[in-house]
Amino acid sequence: MGERRLRVLVVDDERKNSELVAAELRDAGFAASHVGGGTEALAKLEAGGVDAVVTDLRMKPPDGMALLAEVRRRWPETIVVMMTAYAALPTAREALKLGAQDYVEKEGDFVEVIAHVLREAGERKDLQRSNRALAATVETLRRGEASP
Image (cartoon, rainbow, N blue to C red; front, side, top):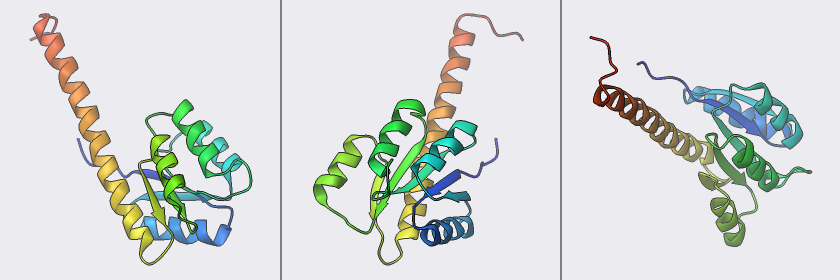
């Protein structure tokens, strides 16, 4: 099975930021698109074809935390990375507790950090998928249901 490009949705109500982050993630090898807020993001998620969401924390409602909670509830397999220019330890803890993969400050080469986090999370998802497939095959063989 060949490596599949992770489909990433970048969410930021500062359009220029979402465009730039998506462009840098495409340069890093991801299939990245962008939207300008939580409502647009939910519509895109409902349409399908999103493996990961990179969302700004501070946006008009639904903000990044509300989007994270909704993604965890409705699409639990989707990777979520929070990004913010206003890092605060309690907020970071809350985001991680709610199921964010990571919490990245918008400074320096932060898109490289996001790309690294996405690659690792994608590899973990692929391994989990392979393990489930292997376990199902082993169970089928164990039951003698496999055809020769």
